[in-house]
Amino acid sequence: MSRAASGTWTNWGGTAHCAPSRLVVPQSVDELAAAVRAAAERGETVKPVGAGHSFSEIAVAPGIQIGMSGFQGVRAVDADRKRITLGAGTHLHQIPAMLEPLGLAMTNLGDIDRQTVSGATSTGTHGTGGAFGGTSTQIRGVTLVDGTGQVRTVGEDDPDLKAAALGLGALGVLTDVTLQLVDAFAIEAVEAPADADETIDGFLDRVASVDHYEFYWFPHTTRTLTKTNTRLPAGTPANGPSKIRRYIDDELLSNGMFRVLCTLSATQPRVVPAINQVSGRALSARTYTDRSDKIFISARNVRFREMEYAIPLEAVPEALRELRATINRRRHKVSFPVEVRAAAADDLMLSTASGRASGYIAVHRYHRDDVRDSEAYFRDVEDIMVAHGGRPHWGKMHTRDAEYLRSVYPEFDDFLAVRNHFDPNRTFANPYLRQTLGD
Image (cartoon, rainbow, N blue to C red; front, side, top):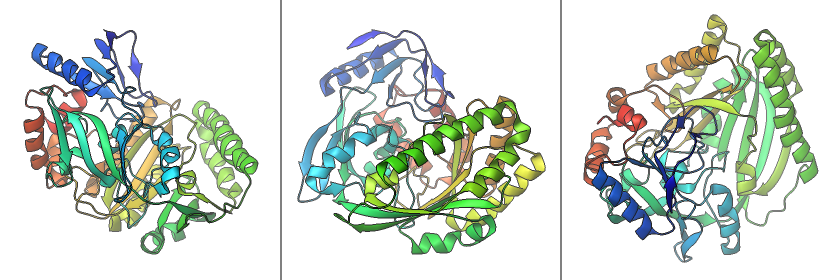
């Protein structure tokens, strides 16, 4: 269960590192509670880690690192209420196979499914859709071990669930999560190239009229790729490009060729605008239908670093125009497209969409791009987003601190009060939480 940690832990994006003092991999709630209790008595800190897919340092464990592989799989099913309770270490990509025999599905997903369900919900992972909230809004209850080693169950009638459903790992170590599901459904996906000005100007109308809408803008070009997903009844036949064709398009071309181009761009930044122009002109339309999770999820095999901010939905067009102007003025060479999505307002204390319909602007840099130029680009993007009252994605790169975050989260101090109750001695503190929540 416990052993001295060896080597350095690194996240997927290479943006966070740590050398834990010990690695603990409990196989039961009792073992986990005992480990946390002992650490608290010794004054040590504890931090669970899932898939390591956050780009921020939220999972960094200077003290004891908790591996969650012992908490996977189905714990309970409530077919009448369409709910499932899963071990907190269950990966998102494992869930569809568990739900298919039940005729159920998660109502919305992001485009990456490598995360654990606890990691995804604790950092505010989201998909897109003007009528749909982030993954955390699907939570109806959690069980966790708090900072004293006590096992707590937080149900849907408990006001603390508004904190625990998206708790940043600051309240405790989640052991299981209960999700509200929906009847299984299919999606028709329509991908199409478009003009950037028309796409930006029409963004709000498209979000209002489409189930799930997003687009990608290719910097240094006037081209975008729009993605329109329409929900259909379960059992709608899959159609469109064959699995082989989609593998060629998504893996060999979208990932394989893109990796080659990014590698070239990293060594020869001056060629980035020309490459993006070629890529933008090469975009083609396609329509296909499949099971919901197979449409929501996309392969992301080219390693990158990412920053994403949520801003008021109506501010998205103006912020994008400012971003385009900044890239040109500052002469940044950006090979990765800018991703633009939307989500409904919710009532979770630290959700990036708390209390307001939100638009999301995500920017990326190839992991081998020049570090100084990448950092300058992220700083410029952050300045734009902050000017619009932006809230950084908790799992993405940012530099915001508690003072700033209090100004954009009306319930920030309410969350801190819950934290004081669940973790009075800061057993789960790490440098990231000290920066974002204070001591």
